[in-house]
Length: 152
Image (cartoon, rainbow, N blue to C red; front, side, top):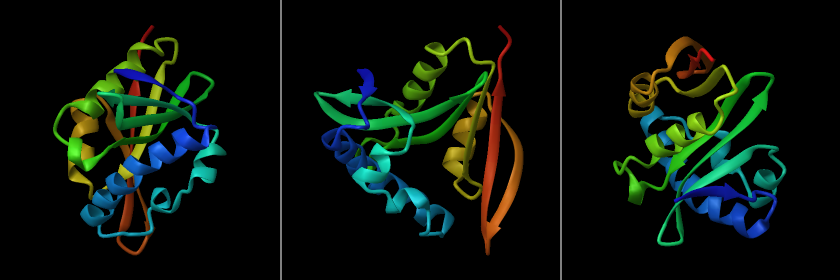
């Protein structure tokens, strides 16, 4: 079941951290960069993020989450995470699909991920996103940017 997460609630922010930290740790290993900002979030930083969060729950337990911000007619996906114990169950796909189906008024979706995070890159490409660029951040860390345009 997908439902909103009240990220301004400390309890819910802590629940998100319980999936965010292990999820982003996997990405850190994949891209060989342990400075991903999401690894250093706290309940307080999540609570102040200004992002809208939705979670995927199984038997009352949070297994995955997506967060985003709206800007004009664009949805900027900030986080899409699944606890490693729930990888390969289609949870990320369900969260992304839910977001798209419940925000049909927005014409554009954008998202970024580590360029060397091959599973995430393939996921976004299979989901209809096209790569718009790669930005070298520091050393060997590169971020791949994607967008998906929709016609109304």
